[in-house]
Every structure is written in C-alpha cells, then in structure tokens.
Length: 133
Image (tube, rainbow, N blue to C red; front, side, top):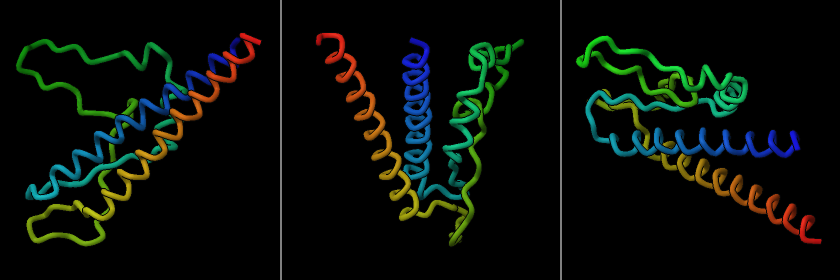
C-alpha cells in the first residue's frame, strides 16, 4: 500500500508543479509586450525534488501578517522562487520574453502534463482490472 501511496503522491506533486509552471509560462507570454518585464521559469527537476522532500508542515507554512497593508510573500512554485530566464536577445524596452522559447516551453510542459495524466490513468485501470479479476 505504501508503494501505491508513494506512486500517487509523486504524480500528484509532479502534476501540481507542472500546473504551476504552466501558469508561470502563460504569464510570460501574456506579458510579452510589457516594458521591463523579465521572463521567469523554474528548473522542473530541482523544484520537484524539493517539493517531494518537504515536510507537510513546511509545505503549508506561511508568513503571518501583523498589518493588513503588509505585502504577501513572493509567488513561489512548490516552495521555490522562480528564476529569471537568461536573455538570448534583449528588447529595447527591457522586456526579456522570447516568444519562440516561451511557446516551445509551454507546449513541452503541456505534453508532459498530459503524459503524466495518461500514466496515472493507465495505472488506475490496471489496478481496477486486478481488483475486479
């Protein structure tokens, strides 16, 4: 049973990180024309490893605000701060979004998300077939 739990927990975490990365990439694409916007991304492997090794207490911990005007913590992906993407070709307005790179990363992340869903679906079907006989 623990192997099944570990398998499902791994895929749950991977899907969560992929979904958050998808939002980050979509934000980059949406801000392609925003002056001085800096494209951000994560290293999926290292963020996934960090997310898998977090205690449940660490994953749900948040900063307390002593005043309603205090800003919230910076947006993170599974507890890791997104990094700025290296500039391959800068724009005059200071924007670092390269639409070709962003579209490729977005498509690749989408495909990997769908592949993870397919794997989980197949695993559940196999378990149901084994249970039903």
